[in-house]
Length: 312
Image 1 (cartoon, rainbow, N blue to C red):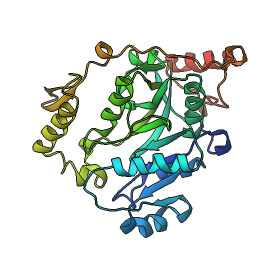
Image 2 (cartoon, one colour; image 1 turned 90 degrees about the vertical axis):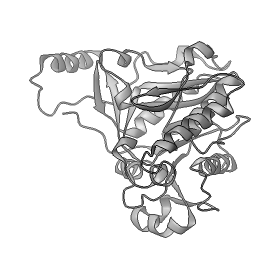
Image 3 (cartoon, rainbow, N blue to C red; image 1 turned 180 degrees about the horizontal axis):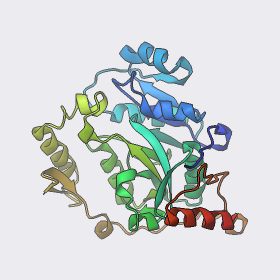
Image 4 (cartoon, one colour; image 1 turned 135 degrees about the vertical axis):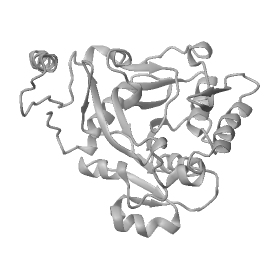
């Protein structure tokens, strides 16, 4: 079993971290994960829940919204985070969903628990090499398949979601009640910005199929009601009908949006003019070490540990 460092130097992180939350003061998974590792963050909540979140998480972590119960989903709160970070003088900001229970490092086909602060630092440094990346994010645990997609450290010009690093200088904002993250990515790509979805680090998030109460699951999707699934897919298709990016198909036994990202978007990464690649260390593990408390019986896993030790 790998031993994970439980302390994070938040000063090494460049950008503020926001968590948008509603109805989950008793189950603030992402907030609890960040607190465990000493990561600074602000959980953004509506006025009627402010005290409850302060009592459960700590007042120093809670940021109160100037509105409540708009019935528009999370996008007004996400735009509030965006503007708040600009007011604080930042060039970018992170916005996380509130139901992330763990983060992992993907290496040699294994998905190993990792300090989220290190994953955030690595991603900031990588994305900041480029001048045209609008949005970066961490992929889902279930979407990075050992032996397949785990061999690619990131996907370019695709949908980003749930744990997003956003450039504050973008000339557009969140705007949809449903599928707001897909729409934001489409806005970026349509305007010739790139997006990056990180596979090297992934998030372990409670899926909507598990029907965790609170958030959009309770307020918007009404526990995955069929009519809400149809509305969710068609509303995205409607706003992009002139460009033809979005189709509505039957997938996994339900109405679902479909976008051929590779067909529509082929935007290369452009390095910043002041970026000096010669200063990059060939191997930089950001303090990460794979420490095995008990030697594994599995020969494949034991070989991975030996290979990593040889690299250091």
